[in-house]
Structures are given as structure tokens and as C-alpha cells.
Amino acid sequence: MDSSLHEVWQAAAGSPFVPTVGKDNQFLVGFVLLLLGLGLGGAFTLNRSIVNLPVLAVPASAALAFGVVYMFCAVGVYV
Image 1 (cartoon, one colour):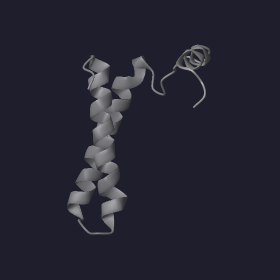
Image 2 (cartoon, one colour; image 1 turned 90 degrees about the horizontal axis):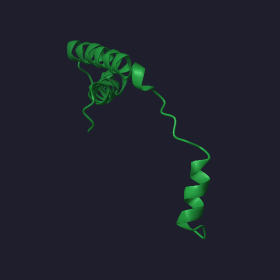
Image 3 (cartoon, one colour; image 1 turned 60 degrees about the horizontal axis):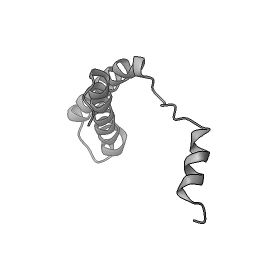
């Protein structure tokens, strides 16, 4: 860590942050993730077993979590 904060700041100025999902598409991505999470969660509820836990339940909870975050960001509520 021999770089000073000023050097790091100058180096970062040349590469601006570009988000993966643009502001115009956040609502669509959030809505699709919510639907995917609800679908996977429903499939897990119909057939609950230890095998389906990593296959259905974990991706369902991740899709719901990210979907809620994207939906909040799309409407202007930042968490």
C-alpha cells in the first residue's frame, strides 16, 4: 500500500463506474427476478427435500433478495 490516496483518486478518474444494469432496465430486471424467485420458491414448496434445497430454495431466496433491491432502486428508494 505505497500509493497515496491522491494517486488512487487520479487513477480511478480515468475509469468511471458503469453499472451492470442500467437505470432504465432496473424495474424489468427486478420484476423478472421476483417472478423467478416466487416460481422457484413455489416449486420448492411443492416438493420439499434436502436435494431440492440447493437446487431450488437457495436460488429462490437469492432471486427474491436481488429482485427486491432492484425494485426499490427502480422506484428511487435506496437501501
